[in-house]
Amino acid sequence: MDMFDEKIKSSIAALRDWKEDLQRQAGVRNSLLEKHKDLKELEEASYDEAMKASEGLSFVENSIQSIRSRTFRSIETVTNEALKAVYAEDLRIECDFGMKRDRSAVDIRIVKDCADGEVLKRNPDGSGCGVSDVVSLCLRMVLIRATGCVPILIADEPFKWLGRDQIPKAAALLGYMAEKLKMQVISASHHPSMRELAETSFWLELNEENETKIIEAKQTEDKGE
Image 1 (spheres, rainbow, N blue to C red):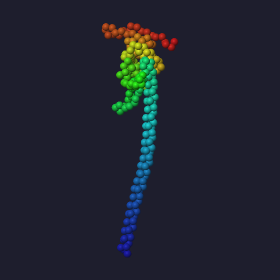
Image 2 (cartoon, one colour):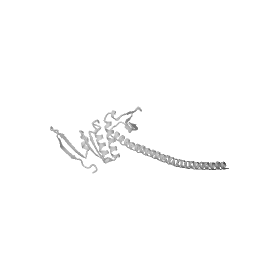
Image 3 (cartoon, rainbow, N blue to C red):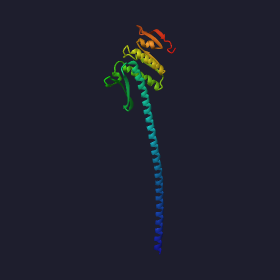
């Protein structure tokens, strides 16, 4: 009987140890389940945040693309009208977006529709007759206004590559754009047309001592009167 009692006691002790072990395992399991639940919730929250971030990024990219397209449509419209005002031939510009060295870039080409149906495309610098002067001036004026900079443009011989017959048209165009875009334009030029269309003009002379002297100053009457 004593041996039997010892076995019973030993079995009961083993059962208690097993019970305690089961309780410890159950505690570990419950802890792991809680962690799994937390991780699942975190994963779902992260997924939701990732989806929101992706949607936000897509919205921003679409907004940027829309703003970019509207901006360059405006640039194309203004520049194309300027080209028509200065040149008799049918010229227009095209803007293509791209990436260069991980930065946004735009390629601008001059397009000419020929009488035989052929379409010529070339860089403004290679068009001759001062086309690049007209295009670059329009781009600068429009972008100055679009970016909110101080509306002042300082130009040194802006139409130096234009022919004499085209400079009066270009000068009139410059004055018209300055008025419409509400910009002040300060230009240095040797051509009389630029002086005649300016609201205020100064005729400067460089003497033998390399000193600049004002020979004549003229204030043009208000064109609106």
